[in-house]
Image (cartoon, rainbow over all chains, first blue to last red; front, side):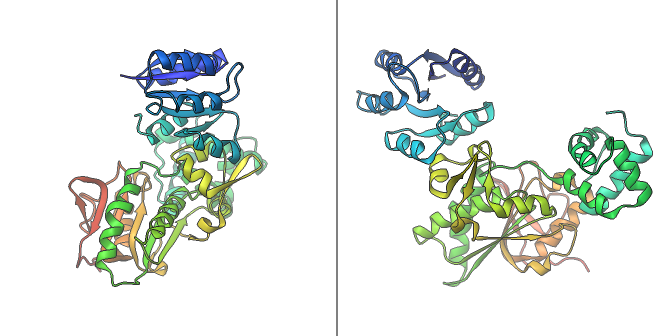
Length: 121
Length: 279
């Protein structure tokens, strides 16, 4: 079973994402901001990370840049999942090492499509 | 919806089948309500039943086409099912490039292209292959029975939902730009596809000869003889070594011997060299 860390400051979004990803047979861990996510990754690197952009304490993009510098931090497949939906943000995310990018609102079909795009399912 | 009286259902099913080949079975009658309610409203009828009754009484040919159009439009997305596109890039194009003289033009037909995601997916792949010199001149012809969806296809405008189904984000960034809430495909990719209205039940020879044909998830809606006629019509437009892609739930087996399936390649059919349509 693959693991996925769901990072979002909204508890509702985390719950929706958890439900979709558990149906896709992922084991879910949650974090409410970038720093929590970083600490979670330092304990155990997940196989996948579903990552919001705008969060208090540490944003998604800051987290990603830091993650990719950590030992083993190149391994997780990172899929952004954010309301930021312009080319500049997407390009910045890819440059920082994101593997895929979901623009909110999302549904199960989009998560499935994007996760299979990057070989997670 | 109040159940459609049997004679109204029979009427509309017969007329739709004659126009588009679509077989409307009673278990699909929900389609009538969901797809035709907007048309009924727009045309000033109080209900779908009223719309169908009026069309029957008046023999309104224009409205019958509008109805056929609404019922035959099916959802599609970029790189749908993935495999037929991987096979195009990794197998079919290399084979055909070897088989053709240098400089020959490959012709591709997307039959029933709907809102354009399939031909545009191929155009994006062709562009990638061209960048590394693995493909030469290509012409992509995309047809559909519905003017409405082809208008959308030509515009190359897709919603945020549509560009997130099947399309890798790298391709989104490379080939699309934002246009308000929508995403517009680049002129460069759009100009690689020629859209033309065509009914699959009509003679396709006017479209010319093709090396590769995509006709996916259409035949499942056709009854037996329409399936055979359509497949043989397609075979008639194909080069002797041409390749046909069908949907995952479709086959030529037991329908026509114009094509041979590929044992380990589901959905890929090769035209049988020397096959001729019975006079």
